[in-house]
Amino acid sequence: MKRAHEVFATLLDAIRCPITTDYDDCPLELASKDFLGPWASGLNLSASNQTAWLQCWESKGPNCNATPPGRINTGLVATAKILPVLSHHNRSELALALAMSTAFPSWGWIVEQGGTSLWETWSGKPFDGAARSCHNQHQDAGGLQWFHDFLVGFQAGETGTAFESFIVAPAITTSPELPAMRGSYDTPRGPVEVSWETSAGAFVLNVTAPPNTRAATRVPLRGVGGIHALRCMERDVVLWHATSGSHMHLSELGTGIESVVAVDGGEALQVTHGSGLFALRVEY
Image (cartoon, rainbow, N blue to C red; front, side):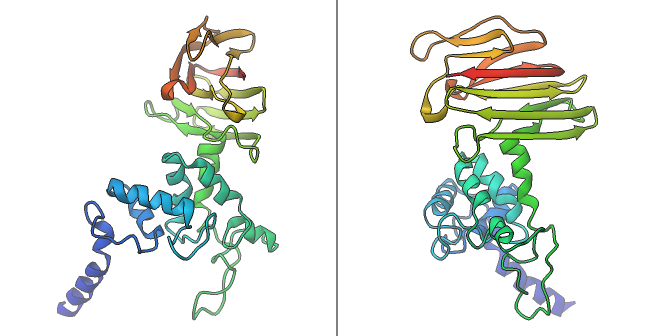
């Protein structure tokens, strides 16, 4: 028992830094990916280290000193966290660049090498000392949930059970690299279908909500190039229109729509509606 105790005491000392209260004793020279798993899992990361971590990814890559920008080299735990953590902190454009990269290491690089499934390692080569490496493993696929949650924009709501309520809020709607998205999800109450498309003149979002559900759907009031919206419609009904400057005016509510509220400092419009097909169009 004493030997086991000594072994575990040594291990505890080795991992004590990543589970301290605020990480202030952890040097940022640690690969910044080492901060990611505990932070995304709910442990506290000081505001200064949060800022440094995000700036590090934007300017220097995931190791702060070794990997070029726009590259990903996280592993089994952190790969599932990196894209949603970036989006939760308003770095969705950076997350998209990582997701679409074909430079090594990346998901796209695996495709460029002829891969048709995810590999056990980014390179496809065995770990040190291993006899072989598997070319069909899901362990680095966790981050792909981000495509569903932030690109299509569908997430479970904060109230109710079994998707009684849900949110539709695409995180990226003005990137030339992503002009449209489409997705569906089979909830216990029926399928939710979401599709959106953006252009210089309009943003179109279609949401099909199953019976006995309530959705909070967000549409952007800023289009390509930062131009502000002129009006938002649900089919032929004008829900909102701009009057002068940044002022806004809410118009009549369409059938099945409970409320229309400006959110995010007037940068988006939240349309709360019930079940059925809702076709929203923002014109710029």
